[in-house]
Amino acid sequence: MEKTGPLQPAAFLVLLALAGGDRHGYGIMQDVRKLDPAFELGPATLYTTIQRLLEGGWIKEVSGPESGERRRRYYRVTREGNSVLQAELQRMESMVRKGKSMRLRSAEATQ
Amino acid sequence: MIRFFRWSLRAYRSLLILYPEDLRRAFGPEMLEAFEYDLSAECAARGISGAIHVWRITLREVVRIGFPAWLQIPAVAVPALSAAALIVSQSPLLIMTIRRAAQLNFRPGEATPLDALLAIAIEAATTALTSFAVVYRWKRASLISLSLS
Image 1 (tube, rainbow over the protein chains, first blue to last red):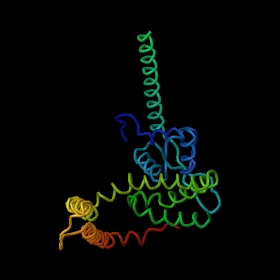
Image 2: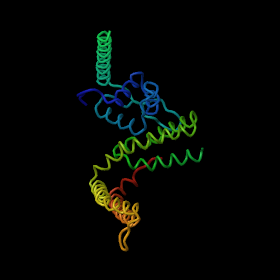
Image 3: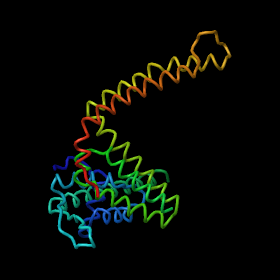
Image 4: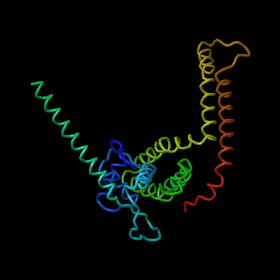
């Protein structure tokens, strides 16, 4: 998957959640809620995003620990996914810096 | 609450049919599991308002993810668009009859708002049944083979 612009919020948050380590679907959902409580992530959005990220090679499926009868699928960020995430974080950082400097300049102009 | 929880799981399992087939096949059981855990956690934390919150997100996802996927299937899109066109084309008649009813200006033999509403409902139901028959025939094989246990 080629990154052609800013990441979709759901893709960004899923990648960010997985940057903390391997997670299963519901684990990602919980982490996303902690990262951004305002973002409403349901199972369909989560798995649509996971499906796209898997297809794009930004995350991969790994075997996780077995829990009871259910064998859960765990996901891990790939090197490509990690570099996309880093690029997105840098883009956001630069936007925040620009936004802050603009606010400072407009505050100076009003004085 | 336990009864509501069980009903919710059954309802969500049924709602999965509204999502794209490839998503359902790849992640159906996991989506159901995530919904179950989410609902359980929200109910434990916030009670009924937590359950409403989970259902609100779920229904919004059906509209945002499920419906657009179904509308890419001609057997669904064509009847749905014809039903929408029918409702739009019949709505002036409904508005006219409502206006007349508001003015109490009826002549014998003229359609009342109820007549207009009934006509639209019958047409819409016919369209819905036609689309259901087509989709059921088309989807039956994949529905039978879909295992979510």
